[in-house]
Length: 271
Image (cartoon, rainbow, N blue to C red; front, top):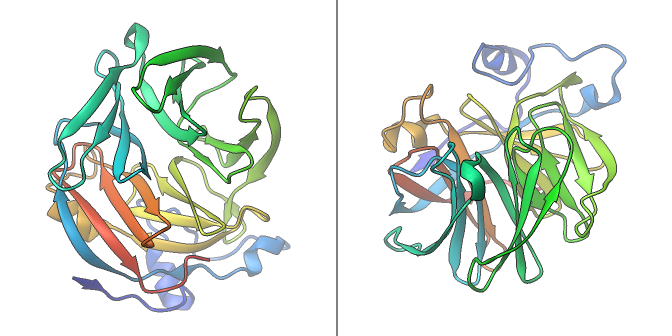
């Protein structure tokens, strides 16, 4: 399936995105350097579709060692799992302790680091067997989590992404995210793809590409058609789940309680 888009979101096309369900504004904020960066509409083709557990309230996703690793949310139902791509079967599973609301995950070395929503509780798990190794604390909320290979990057629902030390979780700096010069909040699940941060924007159909140096949104991908195929209602089944396989350049996309996981081929360079 091919989803066509214009190459630049300017003029009328950009104005059409300035709706309640869109993260963009029709006019850039004045005197803001990031406002000069046009937001590209990123086209894609669906190259494969696989089953996804309809009961999984997806909060985090990454690809490693030939499998998908997924975290799910909701209090008392949150877990981490290794998932077989071909049929969506859960091959290994670990329950998030204390009935907490699980959120983003990221691989760091031989561990998986996971965060929780409002409780400031984080966990480190063995990548090999998903055994809990240790716990840690951090301030504020935890939403999405990814890595640029040097640091961890955390979203917390605000327009700022926190760049963190992988071992201590200490904050190193923040990235102020803007779309057309205006702060963009509700950044959720994160993925690092070819030098850029990709993020689901909660309660919208948009995945955005963020320049980690400036924080400017440089591209947007509309997954409304995928959500409809997965049987999701936007209010209950928000798109949330991005993973990347650098060896094949496959982008995996799913959502909360989606029945399908899609493999995408991007029609524009990833950065």
